[in-house]
View 1: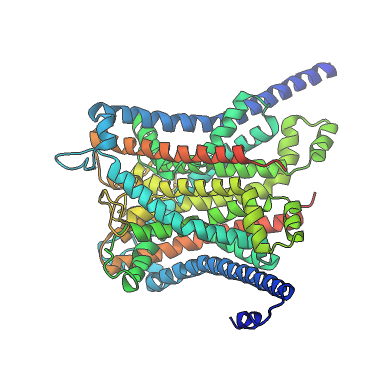
View 2: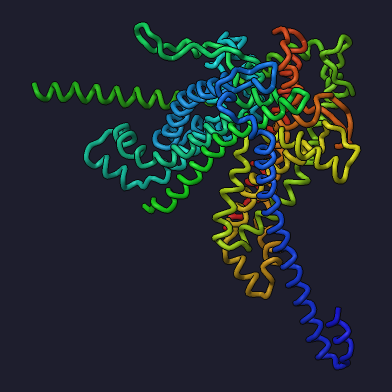
Length: 319
Length: 303
């Protein structure tokens, strides 16, 4: 403003023009500065929200995070309720998901990258996978309810839940597998072919080990996503109040390993948390927050592991 | 003798190779089965639903009360809840995501970017049920205590805001990719002509990257439409035909959750109604996804 009054004092046109240009330049620069502040503010807003979320959760839930909380079943009384059945359920569901998801996803990725011919079948599979990535998770829940539970009769159990989540994270694993296989240089394959390897030997002994870190990153991100999923499991009919554990995987009789837990009812951490949030009263809200902390520690832990792995990968791998 | 053994081994190898390829192919093809399964289940159950409820009623009735003794089946209240929460979400995620994208790709120092991007990625790794908790027990009380004292405990506004925060990283990272894909020649040319960095970003880079940025927004919308837990927790589960985000309302996804929590008999019309709702949801998200794909393909500038 002070500049303006100083400007108006001059009468010579060329001086005025120069001053106008200077003023314009200044306002343009000011606009840029304002934007930079906006950009910083937006970024900080996102980070502050994450911080607020974490702090809010910890303040509400930390007092409940005792040893008993992990070893107790859910209960009518908030202070005695725990997440034993929930974390065991989450663990078993994720085990199933990882087994099915990694097998299907990595195989599909290998096929599309190393084996597939450029034809309409491959095109359909590729378009289909990118479309599946955009399907809302609750629709997978409807698939599981209508097809698995009722049409195929697999039941409302750990197996159905694991299978559903495996299908849900399939696109994530396929995309990660393909990207890391694509990054393996052709010379490696040619060298292996050159000494007489078959296609599968090239793939399994040379390409896959080289691509493994990238594949693992995708698998970790997929598993972390599956751990936090709630909606599709609600649709299947995961129970919200479970006071028993699935049958143990190790038995005292031959063959010592049992898979009957696959067909037991279950609950998982996010569903237990959802159940506690839905109840009125801040007692159970504290439980929900505590379960949320456990869930967050696991998923954020897995995510940072994946981010760190990717970061290391980018630094190390310069073919 | 030796050559015959070698011949046999070669044949075994050949069969093994073919077998492995077949297994790999079946794994890849199973993804197509998933799609067929989804479409099949939704169509079959919706077909049964629409044999009870005419499509015209489904699309025009203004009440959605399938579980009442006098059921009404109009999808409009669920649709209004879904679109409203999506709209609020995009009002948050659109400007913030774009500002973050431009800032990170054009202004931020590499060091700052290296720190911020992983943290933003963390934000997208937070389970949705935790976001729901945050919306119900942090954002709503915060709004009530500050600017909206009359806000009900369940409302679309908080749910929408939190959905927006959830998809900020998604929009920011997709838009940043689009901005960074613009070749440096354009950047340098604009700066050489005397434009500021900000002018370059807004008047040169953004138009050049518009297809990617638009696709990021459309994909963000598609995500917001399909988001379930935040609205199921924080928006209340009452279908409500309204355009006022300060009211409680249900979305398509929240309705499916609500019904699934109760124990509905298989084959009843209440059971079928969640598949009709799911089909509507799938069609909406599919339309947005195809639109995003089209945007990218149509306006992709070949540099």
